[in-house]
Image (cartoon, rainbow, N blue to C red; front, side, top):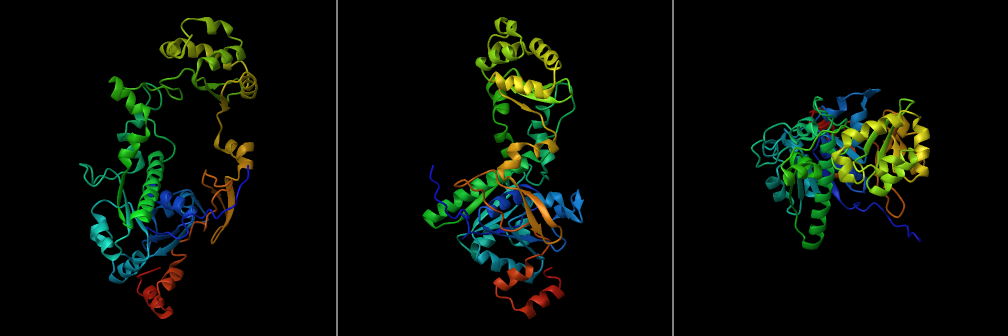
Length: 401
């Protein structure tokens, strides 16, 4: 294959004003920044609240670091006339404004779509909402935990009779950020063709139900609540993790009857293949309570590495269930270029996980490391035409930081 190297900073002519905090908005703007956009992060004078979310390394939040690279930070008091004036100057030259305030806040601050389109009629405005501006819950806080709860996710994972189980990371914030990126890129494409801006609203709650895919559809199509199968699958058996003799776990994905026959060969359980209770996947789903204990007992006879080798030899989809430290010892991860080191203003060097996308065999490179609060305030004000004397005055009057 011949690869022609081209510039992969696809959005280098796009300026994005980022008013977001927490996760859904910042991960969206980080992705857009990695793709080349000039992202200006507007922070209150005290900074994004996630700058204080643990763990902290020499005073810098790992959480903040994970979602705020490829951005420039300006600390600005939007409640003051002069702070708002600076913001409006940025909007004049911007392509996209993205925010995730509660619905009543943008109008109160004067940063709502109707106000900004009077300044720039081609602006694309993306509002990330918990439930949507027309929802009965429009004023309800919508942190990811609450969305995991209300989506049904927490009662469709874990095992029967267990307490509700939360995903270990803010799953639906991440999905909502990605949906926001798709929507923004779509509107940018429309604007390139038709010359108009527009308003986008993305709901965390809607995204959660949409992204759960076949789980809610099982209920909608059958009228039955999906069962809770822990690390197993409601529609495929065996499709789960098994404990091995060394107390490590192996995940096995038998998605068709060929793999089932291969698994029986690998485990030296050939009689199971002939057993009418387990002949086809619907049979195995129906009789999982009889099958799984047989397989659990078998996997306990040897180590994880032994079974991984055995299943690979017999063409059975399987993988080790890694602890997080094992992930970064995996040869794929080591050789993939997914993890890089970057210089940072306060910490000297930090690790970053790059976008899981390659263009012409190259990953987009971050434009900037995660900024310290107000790191680019002076630089941005100078770009807007403010003199050094005026900038000094704005600092002294605590309009900017």
